[in-house]
Amino acid sequence: MPSAEYPEPQSGHLARGLSLRGATTLNMIDMIGVGPFITIPLMVTAMGGPQAMLGWILGALFAMCDGLVWAELGAAMPRAGGSYYYLKEIYGPKGLGRLLSFLFVWQLSFSAPLSIASGCVGLGRYAGYLWPGLIAGSEHRLAIRVPLLGPLAITSVVNGGTLVAIAACVLVVALLYRRITMISRLSAMLAAGVLGTVGWVIISGFRHFNAARAFSFPPGAFALDSNFFLGLGAAMLVATYDYWGYYNVCFLGEEVEKPERNIPRALILSIALVAVLYLAMNISILGVVPWRELQNVHANTRYYVVSTLMERLYGRWAGSLAAVLIMWTAFASVFSLLLGYSRVPYAAALDGNYFRVFAKLHPRGRFPYISVLALGAVASAACFLRLDDLISKLVVIRIMMQFLLQTIGVMVLRVKRPDMPRPFRIWLYPVPALLATAGFLFVLIERPNFANELRWGAAVIVLGTCVFLLRSAVRKEWPFAAPRIRASN
Image (tube, rainbow, N blue to C red; front, side, top):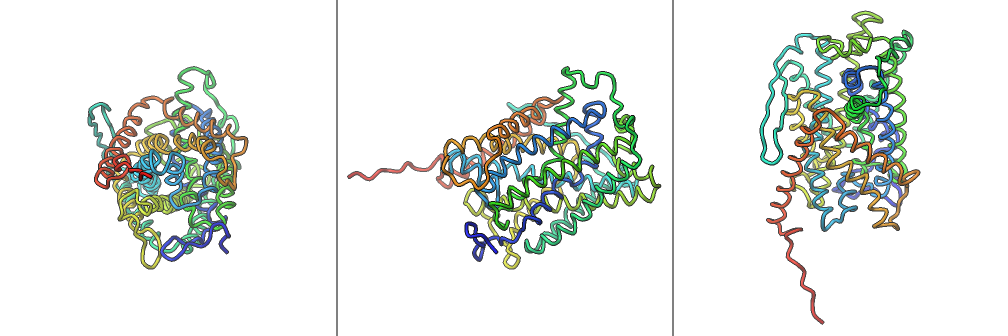
């Protein structure tokens, strides 16, 4: 039954049919995905040893701090589109908030496909364990110099795994072409495969666990010098990518039952459960596979670390089964990502602050099919990019144009609207919001070669601002709206 405060949407709107269980499930499969199965080598390489576990620990802390920010905003404004409405409300719907909410949707048109594509590329990588010929291919580096911004560099990859990744993206689009109530049931089935895979890895790893191998720290592992902090920043960027997804329920706010209760619960539950699973899984893997092997750029272990672990413990059949299960996990994550992100352009278009075509709903299924198709198409094209490029650019663009604005914004809103109904309030406010802000700033700048990703983020912001201003000028909207003339008495 719908709640009194948040009734069932009328005909022509999204259906409120996502329960707490369904929302938590979608968050978890979005968070777990393929990330932890393919990023362990990136984490270990970044910090030069098993001290990379600090990245996951701090990543969990900052995810919970930021999750509390999302929980307060999501419970107060349970609308389709999540951050779009939060930014508009915080910074003013008739002024700066209109620009920032547009830029949020604009960057999401780039960052969401990057996120979706990263899951598909991870799926393609593990397909290479089953069919080694898929990973043979070529890389192409492209660099262009943009006035005022400097060089923008990116690397593309073309091989059989790329085609598998694109095929997975197309299949997800096909499966999402249906009502939310059917999708909720489908997500539960996908989640069973995800949790089963993680459970198998954890149990197998700890049954053959070697503490000396897992905690064989190199000399100077915890020397607090510049190299340590640069490595920690790079590791935390990857951890941020791995944990992201806990906010997915906020994008589906208009479809969640009893959102004032279920949105905060789904956020907190999913972060806590996934943090425990991540730490247990990564420690169990490092207790079987030597961390120095994960640093070897020529070893296949870097590409399918979990399949390698299972093959060594049980034989080739186990490695193949692990590859299939991780491909299932990656597919489930991509499914959840595209589902959540597709609601954002729809909400902005419905509000008149994005391109009108995205406001269309499917006549029978009542879902935003234009958003699903558009994001799916861009994600398919992004499958040609290299995985580390996908992750770094995705995280930096999203932090610059969403997460920092939101963690600061929740404090701004407390000052501007102290009497605003808040069914959930941030615990220990404002400490979590301040910690989340500090963590995001650290990830942005405390990394080797961080300037390239910042330039990409700046390019997206500049281009989006130009599009917004041109569109506003044509439509005679803020900041080009004609001033109102007060009637004289």
